Length: 332
Image 1 (cartoon, rainbow, N blue to C red):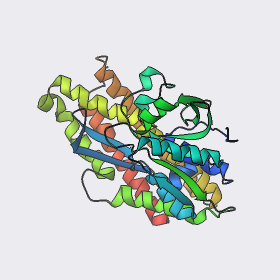
Image 2 (tube, helix red, strand yellow; image 1 turned 90 degrees about the horizontal axis):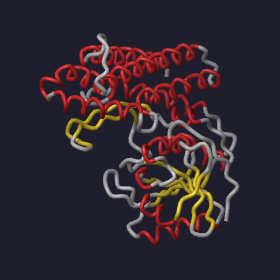
Image 3 (cartoon, rainbow, N blue to C red; image 1 turned 30 degrees about the vertical axis):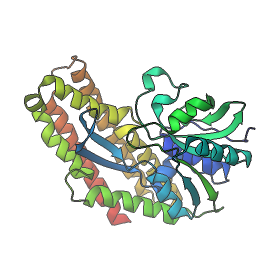
């Protein structure tokens, strides 16, 4: 049993899984379009939510919300299920595959044996698509892989029911209705407006551009407040969330820049190309931050690498992002 499913590699798992599923149903949307219309870009820092004892930082909205927002804006109907019973979850998966329906699933990266060991860690929000079954093996389209792969049934069960936060709970999803020949204009506009509004106007200090400033203000104090070892752990966590989880901070900025580039053509708004270029430059500064922070963590810092210098880069990113998103908010 193998469904004729086209696998396309993507920078981020949710964007890629959604793009591939919609492509199967006749709606061709690029990864940047999925991310932009779904308003995926965000920033948050949770000092009270700890991952391995270290505050959590995120450069995107909650997992699953990109597809939810995209579906609502484009009139796509989606079936979403979660399970407490493992056998029932696998039976439902088999039934959909038998019907010729590829199925998106939420999995834990740690329990996907086809990934190199260096990339397997406890992250329970990785999206893959099952598109067939041969014997005891499931055919998998994992957006981070060059080619489709396969996984044994027991390994897939472990990945679908991993413990921790968020709980995978055997979650699966698939479109049940996809309109054809959609005019994307309204969705694009709503996607830009929502992203710009969230990033530029949310007053809560741990979210959006204020969240970036929140961390930037405290970062230079970490060595004295936490001690060198713990300060490095805190800094390493930020780098990991920025550069290794999905596409991270800089990567999401680059995807949003590509979305603005496509939006400029679709809406016939050439001025968005300038905004795309500015977002790309902001992404470059986030990469500069990660490079310098990485040298500090590895004990290889240059004279220009310091917690104070990192703080300045973050403040710069916050200022530039706020200016860009306020500009976009006025436009839309």
